[in-house]
Image 1 (tube, helix red, strand yellow):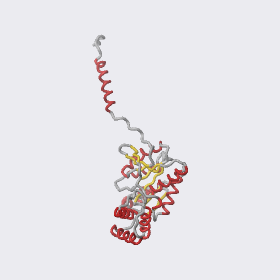
Image 2 (cartoon, one colour; image 1 turned 180 degrees about the horizontal axis):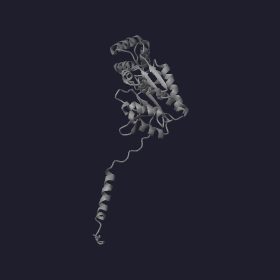
Image 3 (cartoon, helix red, strand yellow; image 1 turned 60 degrees about the horizontal axis):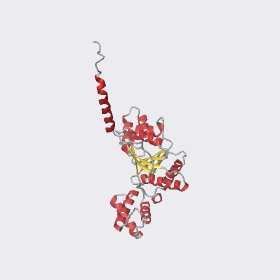
Image 4 (cartoon, rainbow, N blue to C red; image 1 turned 30 degrees about the horizontal axis):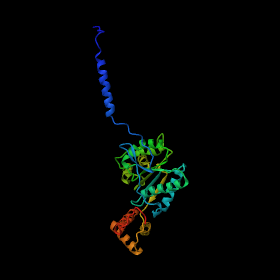
Length: 300
């Protein structure tokens, strides 16, 4: 049936209405979040869910000079970080070993020391960006953001490890060295772990016993740690090192206790905790400072 030219097209009446609906939806839609930046702070925490970098105004750390019993590890990591800060080649670092022996404390202390040196020389400081273990799958997205930044960054993951049901270690391998883009020139990756190969021994042994090609399966598991050019081992400390930590803290914070009493109480504290470590030493100092009515945020 031919269309009557006098008859109006009903869709023409709907166009204004559709336009108003589209405008209303645009107003209701959340605005696109701004791209994360690295301005205004020396440290940031990555929040993968929201894709934001939250500034950390005060980093919880111990002064580099207070770290005891890890002198050689400290020298190596400090020199590696100095080279990175100057734009020279440097390695990713894995700090592994005994609990509470200052692995994460060393990373944060080295960051502060290198930035102090940079500020004194009039050079740009470097940024410390922390990513939580559960956010490792978001690493490619974070690296894309850091790659576009103009600042040099230490990307830090504390207590990094994987279990048998976790396959995110494969994406971490690609990000560290094996991907097409590789690690950005302005980013270095530091991680701490209680395990040298980032995976429990029984997980690796299970692969060895059940895989058709056992050696290839094991290589797949342990090759992740090979992506770290530096392996720094941390081991349980002896009593003298433990007491040196206690005495160093006491001097630094002005805790006025006779030497013999300090050592006796420190030994008793370690016995009640069932071991000696940097963490145990710090916990004792916190207890001692509390009993003396002394704050620890301001030395002396």
